[in-house]
Image: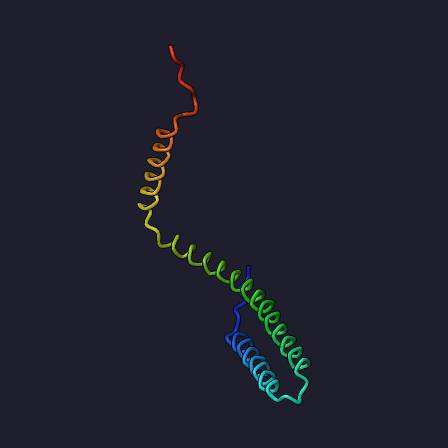
Length: 119
């Protein structure tokens, strides 16, 4: 798995797109205040721009989220490998003892699965 970092400029571009589309939406709302301009057409354009903005955000953020998730998994793996190299060998023995007690506790609490005969 290779890491494909997302440049901050990508997030800046998404931000800039939102600012620009929000400006267009605002301007269309202002134009609607001028009564001799076609209000229904301006409302249609406003809705069209709003739909474009939301669909663009949805798609772009979905793609960015997928890439960031893959990157996070890659870095988690690298951190895990590093932590394993730092692990004290005695920790392995302590962990084995903890698991042994945990398993014994489960057996004791749930039984061995054999039913006891009543006499």
